[in-house]
Image (cartoon, rainbow, N blue to C red; front, side, top):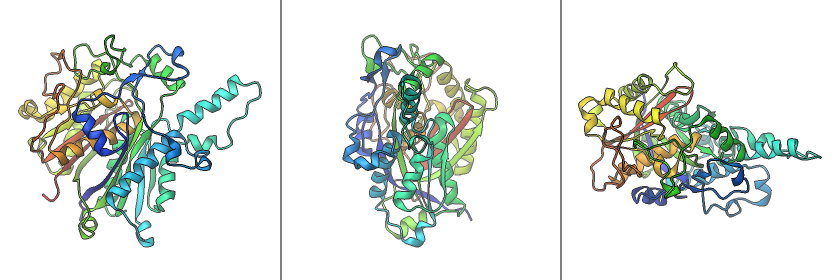
Length: 413
């Protein structure tokens, strides 16, 4: 018999807050973490906006010796994981450690370390690449550091499926517990790709938002007529997932039950979003949760602010939710924290979990000129409080056509 899975701990490092409380407070206030970047390579960029993590000093968390082998994306992940473990008051016996694991998502892993290595090779007359570059850069470094720190001896898996990486990491961790392979999982994602090479690559793809001439912080405009693309961000989010019986037995604080998940592929195009694939994923997640569309009271949309992407997601939601689509609030929190790539699915699922926990819906900011083809209730510009929520959905639709949908509901129910 399949087991129920609950969420007992949350941790986050993001452009709009480095704790779950600060993160959600800023979401509800419509605070944007998007800004003009302050880097030593700013003059080499055409698109100079991003969503960086601020007020993060790695020396507050790690020794100088530790930092030799821990890249920025792994630093974010370890700090978020520590918050989540403390929040869950998670203590594992030696025996329990063999039934606990970690699933993380990341697109580029230690992008900073990799770029430093290439700079040495191509710019230095006497190249001296850091001896630990491979260990700093590998995508599974964050998950491995978490596993080592907490002695998690169960599954240790890293997913790289572009924008859906961490949503799939959370979903697959849920399956590990649901089907009896593990009892506790730390799951999420981390990304730190605000580097010159990554920024130039995204510029070349021509999917980045143009800087708003009046306010750089307003540059990401999901579902708006005048949207121009996504804004790159960085950060990490980690959740503690547990078998519900274990959590109840130890009297843990339970944020929600992770009730449904699906991942599936468009199998159509490497970059173009496809409403058909998105529809299939949402329906499969609802089926897994044993829910009907009308049971969902809030959707955290993928909502990247690309011209095609926002329209296709709107179409998919309409196809799944039918008449109920006019009544379910949908918001894109990317308008505030940007697109954290491999971390964004976990960050947005956490936003949905906190919405459920607080009965409050964060807004889609910068939505002053609605696109007629995007005609759902996108919670424009101002969050809503005192809204009774029983179940929420979080969408992640990636380049490569890899889609993931997560559904959470109140526990017990």
